[in-house]
Amino acid sequence: CESRNIPHKRCGKLIVATHATQLENDLPLLRDRAIKNGVTDVEILSKKDVLTMEPAVECLGALWSPSTGLVDSHSLMVSLLADAESHGATLALHSNVLGGHATKDGVTLQVDGIDLQCDIVVNSAGLWADAVARGLHQSDSTPEGLPAWQVPRQFFAKGNYFKLEGTKSPFSHLVYPAPDPAGGLGVHATMDFTGQSVKFGPDVQWLDADITPDEIDLTVDPRRGEAFYHAIRKYWPDLVDDALVPDYSGVRPKLYHPKIDDTKSAMTDFLIQGPNDHGVPGLIHLFGMESPGLTSSMAIADEVVRTIAK
Image: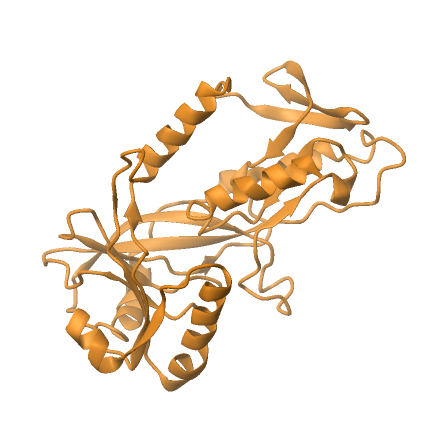
């Protein structure tokens, strides 16, 4: 970001423990996982240390990540697009993939009535990734001799946000609770670049297992605010009534649903599958690309490149 002049702010993040189990078990686990993945500047802080940094936060301790920050996602994507175009890529918006089929030499995509013969296809269709994959791996269009492979099914968890209105942000850092066992990072506090306004979210609202992306209503239900007050007051008890207003929502593609299979973890990782999985040369599928997909985008791209090269 610094070398490309992409707006960003390294404000740091506190992951707070509000009960003993989180302090004794969850925070050390997160710290060890961070170090294992190359983030070595994290440390566990005492309650006193946290109060010095964030007087409004009530907790037993926290995991401090000083290198965490904010980034202007639009500027980041524009910069990546410029890189791609400088290497000969073309961005074709409003191009609908209507179907396609696998061949022994690659993939044919049907795009707005045009058949495109492709050497390499990276299916990064987000909420529609499994639908695109099913269209390409129809039993009547897949060449003989390919391994039996079932397209992973994606489910959807809506994440709602509320914003703080009528008062200045009480925080100078990002403040997160311990991860939510229901499948999210918990209702956390995120600031804008000015540090003046703050939003809280997302929660985890599991949608019907059979809903399609086109049927999802992104409207934030104000009635969900009650649960927000309860969650936020665990680490910011001074939140006053009527301070939160509905803001916006997003949808996470999940690789499990609690009503379908409650034996799987809500923290299921991204799933990147290539020719070694389904047998079609040059075809890479990205499933379950939920948050933190943007944060992980460069590492995901590296893994896609490695998969193509295998």
